[in-house]
Image (cartoon, rainbow, N blue to C red; front, top):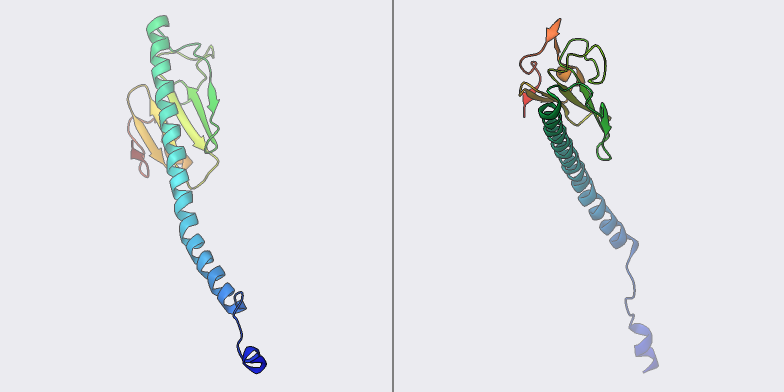
Length: 159
C-alpha cells in the first residue's frame, strides 16, 4: 500500500505556462478596452463642454434682456473640471474684446471652448446662432481671413 501512495501525485496549483497565458489574455482584453474607454471619456467631456456653452448662451441672453446689451456680462471665462476645457466669452469682432471692456459694443457675443486634450473637439458659439466644432483650434478662432466668420470654416463642422 505504501508503494501505491508514492505513485499517485496530486496536482496542486498552476504551472508557470498557465499563468502566463492568463496574463497575456488579460493584457489583450485591456489593450482593446482602454482606447474605447478613452474615446468614451472624450465624448463625455465634449458633451459637458457643449452643455456649458449652451448654459452661457442662455445666461447671456438673459443678461441682454435685462440690460439691453451684453456689456458687463460676468464672467469673461470659465474653466471646467472635466476635459481641460476653458470657455472664453468675447464680443463678435476681429479684436475679440471682453464684454466688460470699454471697447466692446455689447451687441454680439462669441463663446469659444478650448481644451488641453488635442484629440478632443474645440467649440465656437455665436449670438448669431452659428455653432462650429473642430479638432483644430485654428478652425474655430472666429477669424475668416481678415473678417469675422459668418459660417463654419472649412475643416470644422456645425453642431
